[in-house]
Length: 259
Ligand code: ADP
Image (tube, rainbow, N blue to C red; front, side):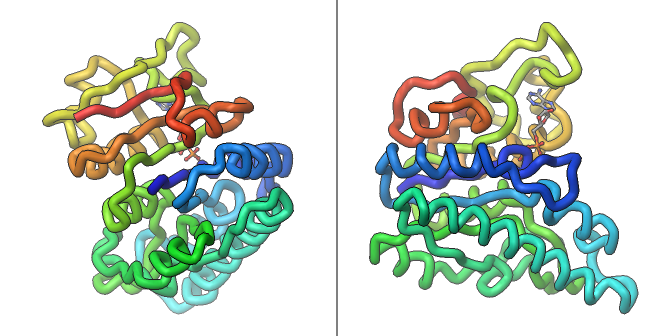
């Protein structure tokens, strides 16, 4: 069982609202077809689809005022649109993809997934389908609603489905000693040991690295999978061949997280 997460930075142009990165999506669909690695679940992020609307209405922070209600729906709908583009590309590549809406079977408590009914996803997988899910606007028992990241979802699915490996595809080669987009001589960390470093402050201190932003969130989420004995590999999904190699379990440029 493999879980592949494709970041919003991969499937969209993050700085152009509602712009899918069709070239990346089509190439990755072909790589997924070629890897022929099943069972597989694909999760994607929101990028320039989910994020702008969620931010405009303050969805992640929960219910405060009536005007947010329609924003909750608009956020979810934006994700359905992006999901539709991705699922179509996968189908065109011959991958038996099947769209699954996270908000219809997941509930959070204070932004963390507490209820997740995997029966349908499990049956889809047994039938030879590849469920394609996404970070979504979901109902939250404490704050009314919230946003779950594709990273949190990928890790929860990995644990619930007892996956062997989680491949986190982003727009950088893996975890670096500093943000590679800001620091020119940042070095790629090929193996990152997380034992006892599973919280935000400690990851930076203990490893003498400056992991921030989206990458910090990823590593923090991934810790839960690593602790459950699941292999987690971070690769650059904008570079051809990396995701295919990671799905096949081949040696690939990236960061492997270790206990
Ligand atoms: P995605 O949208 O693919 O899920 P994010 O954009 O949320 O990914 O997070 C990845 C980003 O995190 C990278 O593009 C990079 O700019 C940033 N980042 C910050 N610190 C680091 C680091 N130490 N190593 C790698 N990336 C980092």
